[in-house]
Length: 385
Image 1 (spheres, rainbow, N blue to C red):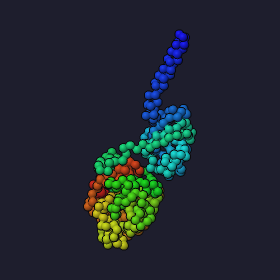
Image 2: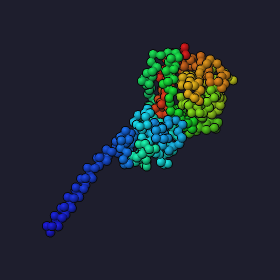
Image 3: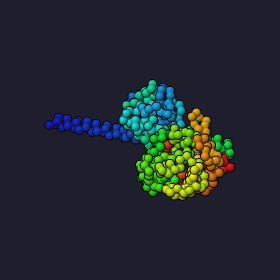
């Protein structure tokens, strides 16, 4: 009887010991789950173990020492780094994207992922003969705190404009071009979803506000129907003949949702005062060579064109050199008018909170560049005086 009790006691003690060991391991496991590895840590631990890694998307690897940052060839891979501006491939980790995650995380389909933080779980093992993550089982995008409150004006990002401080005229225009030139380009098809966010009705999250009519309309009523909305190039895409190509043709800073038939009526007209009233875009006027938008968006239109004239200087192969002039009927020349009227509209309709919110969303979530004339309206007269 005694030996039986001793045996039971030993079994009980052994059970307690095992249970204690399990409990001691739990905090460590929880900590691991809550604290993913940095990219530098993952690079230093290529031990084939399954780990979770977090970093900024900086491009797509196409060879051991080559990472492209635009014109992505496919959705098969991406590169992560601890800084969104990292350019050294030795400080990047290459992620092999399995087919189940390509539609959500492939860069050809989702070019706006560049600059965003994502978390990846997979095996730390070489890919493209480079530090990598393969056999991926989970991928997620960090979205906390990136969208500004639409009711609060967003203060200018002063550090962003350090290189422009104290400059005027052509020197200021050149400095601002350098600052805003390098931006993430998105596909024309990706513009639909982007506009659903940038032009969301602050009073109805299911709708967007149409530029020329001011109408609040369902986000997914885009198309070619009479009352559908489509993608308006405020700098008419024929003025410079850039169409819908990456860059000027897909730049969110001048693309806005507009009623389909109103968009057709505006066509590629330059901007000027006067004409006949438009029956649907109340407050807008037009004639054979110009379009005048409603008062509430006159300044918006002007500042979008000021941005385009600074961003696109033709210094990269294939990009147009866009300039403002004091003419109408500019046709396919890379010019847009009428400058004197746009300057008046800029003063007449000052920057509002909706413009600031839109600028912030484009900067944080999509292109990662800003419209300087929303942040600093005074720079308009400093350049075009």
